[in-house]
Amino acid sequence: MRRRMAVHGSWVWGVLGMVALMLLCGEERTEAIPAFARQLDAKCNLCHTPLPPRLNNLGLAFRRMGLRLPDVDEAGNLIFKPLPARNPFDTTSLITDFRYRDERGRPSRFDLHEFEVFSGGNLGQRASYIVEWEWEEEWEWDMSEGQLNIGKPTSSFILRAGRIAPLLWEKGNHQRLTLSRPLVFNQRVSAGSFPGFWLRDTLIGIELGGAWNRLTEEGQVRSLFASVSAFNGIDLEGEPALSDIDQSKDIMAQVVYLWGESNTVGALWYRGTGLGEDDPATPADESSRDRFNRLAVFGNWRMKGGTDFLLGWMRGRENSRGPGGVGKVSSRGFFVEVNQAFGEKVALVFRWDDFDPNTAVEGNTRRGWTVGFVYQPHDNLFMRLEYQGHKTGAAPRTRDITLQLQVVY
Image (cartoon, rainbow, N blue to C red; front, top):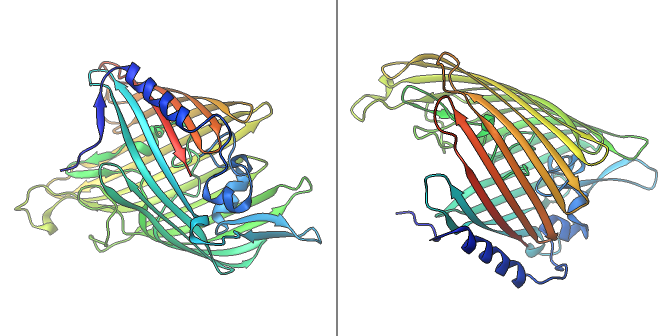
């Protein structure tokens, strides 16, 4: 049985615990910084704007070019420099996540929410790898991918395979400033006995794509990334499938363009299949079969003064057939987010979510606000305080307050 370390109590215990951990970390800036910054002898804000884990365009280009940093040679031409790892410890980061959470109608709790081991680096001049394990009630394999880049810095062919993060545009999903994801990533759309699909998970598959990069007169990199991917999809429980259980691959096509410090725009199309299990005695070929697709557009615009605007829109359709099928189910949703940075250590986040899992049914649209405060007092220390309130139809409004302390090495 899964078990989480938790202490139920009041807000006082949560705040006292956070303060104690901060005092243990000391008041001076720590020397150790996360793996990539440690190798590059750089600060976090080189690749993160306004604060980690949100990647700026330099960080996105670094990620897509196989963990190689954009630079210029003596002649002023664009190059991508590999990481100067000297030993396995240079490529590894440890992340500890403590949280205090207070939800309306539930006991509050302070716990070790997650422990993560992350490693990523170069293998020669063209290959790279990322491996990630996390403990959240139990140890889980979250990501394990290999990447091959072939070509010139200005135009490169990219091959990725393994259990990979499928989205080229990550600012609203894994590299978000809020603790919670936008609903368009975090809400399943179920159809009959089919458990539903979301775009938040890493998936097992292969990706073929390309990158076209150029250096502007201001010294910034403009990049266009495009790819087509094939995935195993999800299993009967709605989790990433280890094998292709329904004899057909999920297909995803996407494109992302980067310009300026953080400006991005992208689009994706996903088409997949799934199975629903009506009854243990029902033969597999008589269970419900679902074909689903997702069409989405996302973007980020950064203004002078440290203000970021993010927008995401998604539309989906499930076509569930068989004994447990319910026919066609259409869904749609969007989010709008505003981030305001105050210097290099503090940011405020405001996000509005609107998500309708079935447009044919009245009163099931979920919408509401997320307000967050992000503070990075040290290279290794992050604090987040978040309020989230959502309302679905005539149901009472939910209220969720979370305080996080994250220690990163």
